[in-house]
Image (cartoon, rainbow, N blue to C red):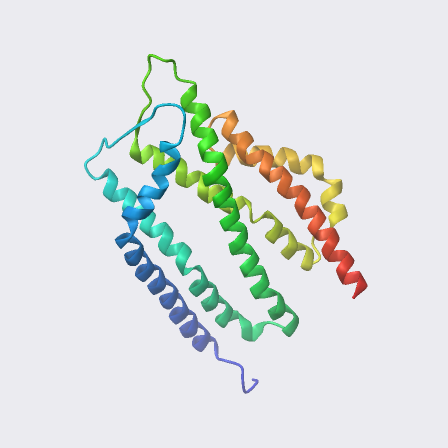
Length: 241
């Protein structure tokens, strides 16, 4: 056995402590986020206050607001812990990676975090207000839009998370391209099949209505085209090298 090679049980012990540190980070950031959950709650309520249609958010359960604050704190705790979690994963895996592989890890991680932020921001500032205006505007004049606050936050948070995840498409495609599994020509050839798959995925990930599916499918198709362009750019750059 190589001198620097760790025994299997030592690997398990290290993995256990890495997981404990990552979970501890989530717990600490969740507690901190809960202390500021009122400010986040006010920020998340802004899209409802800017729609043209009249909307009345109601608390229909005694514990509804408390549960919403817990959900917000937990989501923020996980998001704020991502650098710590990724650092723990990196520390555990880096001894087994080649120098060339290590070079791409952190740029991909940063690109992934930026992509998630762009996707969530796109949903918050563009998709959510437009979707609220559209759906609430369908109600007749003699019908009031009285919505439970937990249903509103479920709708809002689902869109933010889903758009943040689907904006990882370029990141995943670049990783697969680096592994030699896909090429720009491959994506271009199977574009029609990809569009059908995108619409099916949008139908599964979004609430069961055609407009929200379109809100997700159209950006995904644009991301698919942007991914093809990025892969062409990367492949040309590597050929020059």
